[in-house]
Every structure is written in structure tokens, then in C-alpha cells.
Image (cartoon, rainbow, N blue to C red; front, side, top):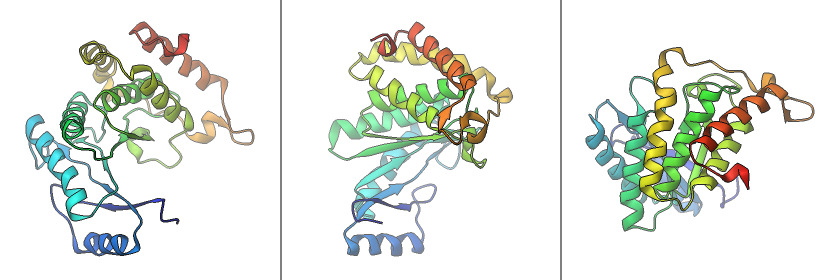
Length: 240
């Protein structure tokens, strides 16, 4: 790896760290490399509810820079029941924590994406859009996604989810916060009722022509359907 690459070290839940991470952090500091410190506060876990988890999120973010000399912090508030970052509660934690830090510092913040639905499904793309909206309007500089299907199945991700993440981020950049909140509430309402029946989706090999590395017609149709939903919600990015 090059010194300019991000070298990862993780904190533990909540506001804890082990000796191994301290050793790795010391090595990174001595080597003078870019350091990415990761931590995913758990909503409904040790921290508690929405307000408490947000406070923990802010604290663990600041701790990344103080204790481990981070170049940037990779966040990822996750729901204790669903194991994803795209629930209404997880988005609220991520949005408020980032907004507070961005208003008062020049720290570089990222967020990682774990959806419940898998690739080649509208639900996966809508989950991705909700988090991209939250991260963009709250001021995060780095969007790290997407680990579809909770990120636990081999090959269950494609570039299409990341593309949608980026396009939605561009679409909402600079929009009025109140207007975005109304849109976000409608968007989350579209998929949160389906958590118990979320579609598993398809693997990369099923979503792409693996020789040409282009998405299948099926996924393009799914993508276009998600684009139409976002356009109907008020985003004009795909009309330009």
C-alpha cells in the first residue's frame, strides 16, 4: 500500500478500544500514512436510544482524531434489530452527528452503507438513496458504499448501487434542508414497512455480464424504476 492509501483501524462498541488497535494506530502514526478510523455505533444497543447514540457517535468520531490521529473517520450508525445503516433511526443518528461536527470543525467524515435488500432490487436502491441524501445534506465528504444485503453474503454487491449513491448525492447537493427532510421522510416510508420481507437480490454474477462488465437489462430496468421514484419525489438530476 502507498502512504496516500487509507490504512484502517477500528474502535470497538461503545467508546472502547483494544491493545491490538492501539498497536496498529501507533504503527500508522510512525509510518506517516493516511489513517481511516472506523466505528459503527449501535442504535438500541449499549448506547441506548436516538439521542444517546448520537452523542456516542459524536464522541467516537472525535476520539478517532484524538487517540488514533485519524486522517478521516468512517462512521456507520447501525440498527441493533436490522443490522443496517439505512433505517430511519440510524439515518437520524448519522445526520445529526455529522451536522454537529461539520458545523464546528474541519474534520473529514465518511459513512458506510449497509442496506437490507440486495442488488437488482428497487428497495436496495431506495435505501441507498435515503442514506446518500442524509450524508450529503449533513456535510459528509466521503460516501462508502454499498454493502447490500447487510454486507454478509459473498458477491452480493455491484457498481450499480454505488452509482446510484453518487447520482443521488449530486442531485441533492445544495438543496434546502427543510425540503430535503420532507423528501427523506417520504422516501424512508416507502421501504421501512418491508423490512421483514426484504428481497435478497442477486449476486454480481447474476447482475452483470462478467466478461463485458456491464449490467444486465433486468438491472437497468430496476435502476430506471428507482430513478423514476426519485424524480417523482422532486430530484431533477436525471432530467438534465
